[in-house]
Length: 98
Image (cartoon, rainbow, N blue to C red):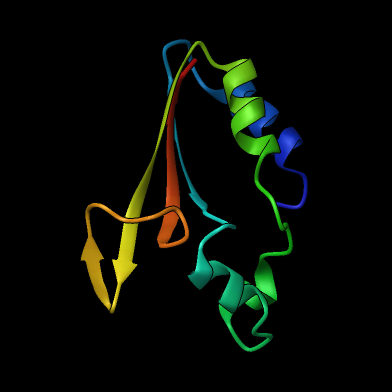
């Protein structure tokens, strides 16, 4: 997203009342994401330019009545793990209801 705040506002505008937003966000604190952001040949390195995603959860929490977020998809030694540190967690999942 080139302008996350405007994008979230537009999603909120077009959602029906009680509509659900499900956002999957790369965790910029993840070692994996940081490595890929520094690799100009990777998809993430070519397409992800924001070093932080703080404005996205803040805007979602401001606009939507019910929000929940959690970390998901942690990978360690090429295996998906349930319990891991924040630097191993690659995705942040947010669910919000209008």
